[in-house]
Image (cartoon, rainbow, N blue to C red; front, side):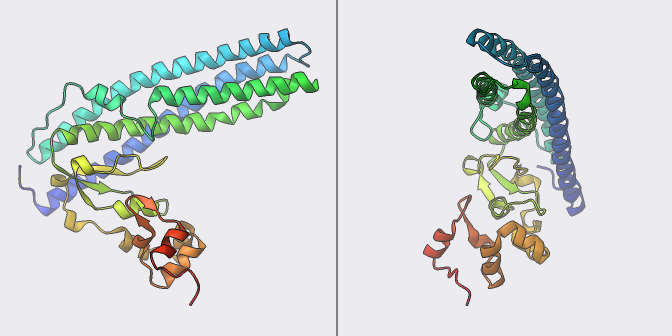
Length: 308
């Protein structure tokens, strides 16, 4: 491994941080594309629904539902094919970027031959792409089915509830952004598992950082014991090889949190925990093993919730 000066090491870490920001921007573009395509499908569904002044027979209900389901299935097919292609592109480009980054430190990283399958079969927030899309499809079709059933029973116009369909665009857009971000993180994790023994947990420290991620920030883990990312939906944390970073120079979440305004601290912790924090209970006391402790669990640990 090449010995870097403090300045060179800092420059390398800044390069890593900038790369994480680029990943966030890429996720935003995925979200926007998904929402645009979904709204196009929603327009077709809206036209079908608004043609109907009422639904008077079961045959009419089944015919309309069938037409709507075609639009849903076409969108999901496009989305699955598109995300599979983008995933392969992410894995390829991220692998190349990681090899170049390791070279800064004089390291020759090796890529496992099965990296694509390892990445794509790793669930993101407990879901693969297929399971995520299946769940969204079921929810959307159930919502549309209920819309038509209500119109059939009440004699109302089915187009009156179409706004419920367009509202689903936010859910699927955020879901695909999360999936793309997880693909980047999983690619990094697979490469690290094959090339290093220890990693550091790096959280994005700002007012949106939760205490759980903040509690992990800066911690060193054997690669086999590192927390699996993402910790939660829209998690922005990453793992980085221990040799890429000066662990002693990482500011703790506690130091960062102490520098926030009282209003920001209260927004993050909530009223009760903020009162405890003001009484001297460290912010790290509110989490344990990657889990936010409940007020009852805090009491069981001897923390008095009552004002003194």
